[in-house]
Image (cartoon, rainbow, N blue to C red; front, side, top):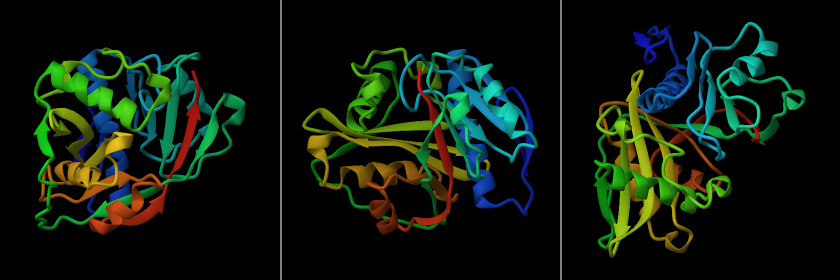
Length: 261
């Protein structure tokens, strides 16, 4: 399989490529699509993807190591060429990363990559929960606000439109979902199909709505955007038991560094 990252470079994924290979390429594809739609700075090389979508937030700007670099020493400078100093950025890698403290990063942790094989599922949805796909700017704004407040991403609070996505991101390979109860959005998820997998991201539930199955129902919505493909996600400690109940299995640990703004 040859996978072309949006507008920049080509990644060759052979039959021998692992799900980890496909997962990181698909995650890079997702952020590159968002950056291209917003006409924001981005980089896609054979080994590194970096995007600058906004000026604040823990997860807004991301760099993915899509292939183990020959020269790790040059990676922070390459990221900074896209996301300048004074703006936050997270660097995520399936491979071990040398200490980036001197480059202004701190180690967040080594979260697991989880995979769910492509298989039929008939998930249940709490009867009071209404799940809808986001199709317009007001819906995307409500989605983002719930992500910021539900995760929460305190660096993005108070939430303001324009710091994460442009509405042109809608209608493409990334599909956004909201779950509402009595007209109030309480949970979110997004699914992005690329490189032979579905990337599941942006799962958030408002604190006062947790423990009722809403997060799991939204995770199913993203997981099944293409039921013929395996689904992948980077888990949090809070979410891992839910994903395991859905059939996700932890297959490796990635490395997550963050450079504050």
